[in-house]
Image: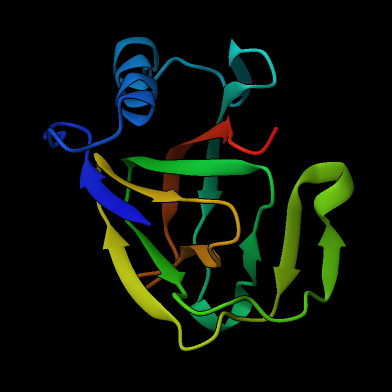
Length: 151
């Protein structure tokens, strides 16, 4: 897992991640439609969404097998839990078809709060629970870059 801000990219950030973030900075505006947008076909693409956050207890944890996520908050504030321990047994396993599995929660979850411009990178297998409310539920506009790492 990597955490940072798109306006202050660190020199140690891997070049592939830097390029994806720079692409978002250069091409995504308030007018960008929600939904899927290609960068490099199924190798790299991004999803723009506008969702309401929910209380932590109402959100389910997830992980992926083939794609890493770069989750970038464009507007609003979002709590995100993560687990540094191996994932448990999923209650919903769509890894083969949709590259996502869900479980009620990660093991020994920790929380990070993301504000506008903040991003977090989750590699395949890293359990995370996005869209958690910080205080009252609120609207969040975000981008999730999906980058294929397992070929």
